[in-house]
Length: 160
Length: 160
DNA sequence: CTTAGATATTTTATGTTTGAAATAATTTAA
DNA sequence: TTAAATTATTTCAAACATAAAATATCTAAG
Image (cartoon, rainbow over all chains, first blue to last red; front, side, top):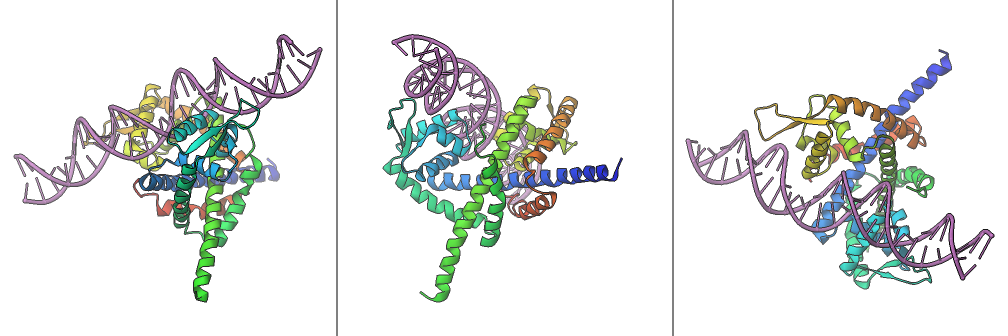
């Protein structure tokens, strides 16, 4: 075996460990935070995390979003979105409208109630995140966020 | 308002944005990776991600784990573990044993089939992670993993 | 115009997940 | 020892999630 081959093998081995470790840490961190936010949303506002996520997405888009846009943005399946929107509609927080001449699509947007409802929850949500991520200084947070940006640019669009 | 009060307010506002942004990036990154791993496990080995996670946990503990240990380690609810272990048991990949004098507990461990089965999947899994995280050099990965360590030490044990 | 293909959404079947309540077994304290 | 509290797990109902198939609509080639 040549020196460069040994080098390659050693590098690969190092990669293996450090990247796998990174992934496990990333997963643990996000599960821990997600679990805590889920719990607080439930006890404080009696809302589930997926519902909050949908409302957050719609809040950013006053014109509304297509089902397929929601699905891609939230990275969940199409059928999943249908069920979530059904339930949110039943509860009067969201509504489907037909706006284009395209009868295949339905534009989803927050109702007035949903809008007001969300603004309250969003304020708490923001505070909780600051609390839960208080280990990171603003600078650290900024740097870390930039580091994780690669995923957004890289795969975000890829179909599932 | 005093200068220091203004300062505080400005700092808080910065925190707000950077930490929330960090959380959203963290969440997107882990969802993207998780989704890709889920897909590959399904198409390649016809196994779901939660099942893989359970088997990975058990693989690390040849002596087996209690249901409650699994629940805490994987950060999922108790009832969830019961269902997963039920199905894995049906498929012959996992078995429950009664080992202590405590008849409340059941020690879960991989069967021989489950063990062999997992080793194959784990190798692919490791490769996939290296591919998906190839944007990070080993050093970057190491550093990032250390940065995210705080969560492990901080909350990991907290009850849900 | 008609139909083949593409697109958007819903439906279906199965599996995962949660939180709460129920069950069962152990431990502690009176 | 016995009752109360604690611990470990399971059961349950509802919500969430996925992938694949079905439905409905639109677009475009001929």
